[in-house]
Amino acid sequence: AQKVTQAQTEISVVEKEDVTLDCVYETRDTTYYLFWYKQPPSGELVFLIRRNSFDEQNEISGRYSWNFQKSTSSFNFTITASQVVDSAVYFCALSHILTGGGNKLTFGTGTQLKVEL
Amino acid sequence: DGGITQSPKYLFRKEGQNVTLSCEQNLNHDAMYWYRQDPGQGLRLIYYSQIVNDFQKGDIAEGYSVSREKKESFPLTVTSAQKNPTAFYLCASSTAGSPSNEQFFGPGTRLTVL
Image (cartoon, rainbow over all chains, first blue to last red; front, top):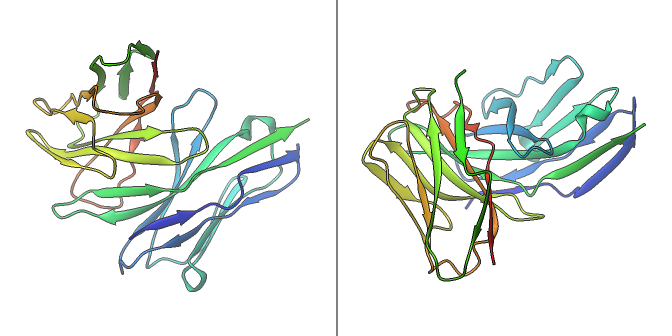
């Protein structure tokens, strides 16, 4: 069975602080993908990044960076110099590859990030 | 503009009534999905379809039904058999053939049972 744990229910920071969102996953698959999505107050999920199980190279994109460690089954997400517009719920998701292509996602419960002035 | 549309945005239903949520995409995606989101919980998969005229149950399919007669459309019916239907419903789509493809989400429908 697949499982994604986001232990941080809510995080509050002051603008310009750095913040890290934690994600721990469980899977028996040898090949899988991990995703981060952002859900602003409007409700629509926005894709941020994907990482496959064979690629542990960490990535930086602007103010966002991701740290994937297969040894600890973690895929953490860091926002540098947070801004009020970063306020949203962030979801980590784990894929299970379907026969015939495509994937089935298992989501964590999300972390509500509040960035205040 | 390409994307996913869901209608209506808000939906109210009386107990015992069936209701159908619309999901349309113009991204030419083969795969479509329905998720349910409850407060404090992540998204849970209700049904998914990888190709027209075929669909599979997800983790919480009881009380729901779907159809996939057209590539662009994947309507979800919440039946009276669903014991606790009040929730936020999200539709998504993706290209098939590669498990790395991200899912694109619609704006969601908030269903309230009165």
